[in-house]
Image (cartoon, rainbow, N blue to C red; front, top):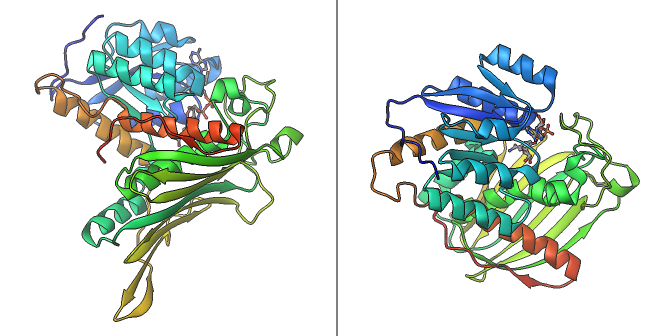
Length: 381
Ligand SMILES: NC(=O)c1ccc[n+]([C@@H]2O[C@H](COP(=O)([O-])OP(=O)(O)OC[C@H]3O[C@@H](n4cnc5c(N)ncnc54)[C@H](O)[C@@H]3O)[C@@H](O)[C@H]2O)c1
């Protein structure tokens, strides 16, 4: 294995971005806006878009295939914004050649592949960070602080959902292929609200899952997104993932979470994100309606014995990806001078736990019964 020198506080981190869709472009723009990092290589298969992005963002080198980018020996970071089935091969090659990796969610299409990525990050002692950007929303961060400062007692149940009325991201694209994506809205959108719920609940360990999943609209070609699809269609796929999933998760401490995700459903939901925690002494709710940026937080309590509802004035600016990437760069720098393992706790462990839960949802839905979740090490929030 090649081992690159660990960057110091003053080194400019050299980045290679793979992918030119929403994810890759967002990564590219985030690094470009941040001090101390420079995107020197960009890869993707849409030639015109590749040339245009490289020119407008000042990237020196472009590649059609990720292999040529990862083979460079002068990159500190590989940033992955490609279809889910490519996360594993790209991350493995990057980690094994001593690079830090920033990977889009989900970490991989299955928990076993995610576990291999975590093992590779540990072996190389390189940071493996995952783009759970929605947890960086100002309202989620507000709720995290609020729960720390004003605990709501034992949280015994939570609800987390991301529901779309008509939002399949490309009806026959890679998104709707089990082999390419690993699953449908549960792995795509559900993994974000699962992340927010686990983060706000303090990272309880999921022990069992009972789930159902359906494919009613998607397989009939209904429910396509009105907001455009992925840039790399890789079309012609059968719609062999769910379009709606519903799961009950049990935690080691006896608490539970209801998790729902849909790309399409005949329901009032338009683009509805909701996370609600029920505590023995209070409750909190996040409700984001069509990416709303204000009025998303509600707190429930008793004041002088009277049921009370409060709506703190929290505004949510854009830029959650940039915030995760900023933290990722800081983690790389902070570990630079430490004793090995420099990056303990930053090898993708928490994302692996989420991948195990997603696996269990699909396994339970297919089996028609509750299944246990393969245990991962406890993760600190
Ligand atoms: N965190 C978020 O908010 C968020 C939002 C959208 C997508 N995503 C995730 O980002 C990833 C990409 O999604 P997207 O919507 O940007 O997809 P996309 O289809 O729009 O873009 C994928 C890119 O990967 C490139 N690619 C495919 N094969 C390649 C290869 N062999 N070598 C080099 N490049 C290759 C394509 O050329 C394309 O530019 C997925 O994992 C998705 O789940 C995350």
